[in-house]
Image (cartoon, protein in one colour):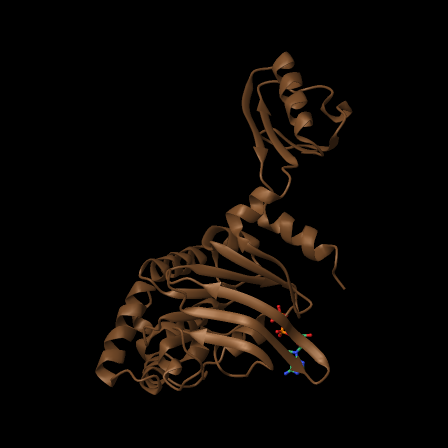
Length: 301
Ligand SMILES: Nc1ncnc2c1ncn2[C@@H]1O[C@H](COP(=O)(O)OP(=O)(O)OP(=O)(O)O)[C@@H](O)[C@H]1O
């Protein structure tokens, strides 16, 4: 297995404030790794260390098996949470300039920019200025700035913020295809549904420490299943009187029932079958959002 990005026992202090405390993390080639945490958890600090913008006080980071070196600038791409494009400069000028800084020849950068603008369905932006674009479209240009030099390692911080649903899908599709091309992607987001859809492994930071880490599938399987979806032809009486049921919500299509034990799920099914035709009965794994709130919510400041 190739791990182009390996973080080992890394810590970072700002004065006497510990921003990141002894984190370990390794990202496979061709995977999107989710870095999660509440505000101030230490995600940006971690990403800035990966980018070599700041140095760890302890531990080591390895890129393709080696320590920090100048050529990493062309190996890595970064989409920062705070956008950093020049509002008054023409898009072609600044993106080509950024690509050249990372070692791409001008005509190659120009070709690549045109391809990206086509891909994002905005070919006419070539001659436009950033300030003329909507926030969401500026975000697409910022994304192009991160990938224009075809980096192997991509650091994406809140990549889809400010985008409408159509553009979210477009960028999601793009991130997935970059993964499929073999890029190594560190992905930070507060949107748990996006992380759930894209990431194979995750690390949840909380107040600078890792509180949960591993394969998303295994993490989800390790949490109890406390939600049942029930759809029936007729209304069901007595669900809320079953022991182990903590709440019953009736929606347009059916019921969402919270339970405390697996036996309760079987009692729900039995009760439903006694009263109606059951169209759907499903014991749900917790969502990542529920897991996050359970882990971080308990410890939130
Ligand atoms: N330059 C700095 N000087 C002092 N403290 C800092 C600095 N940068 C970050 N911190 C502190 O380090 C901690 C981690 O911050 P960081 O920006 O890494 O969090 P984050 O997880 O990215 O948060 P958010 O989701 O809000 O972006 C916070 O307590 C923050 O106040």
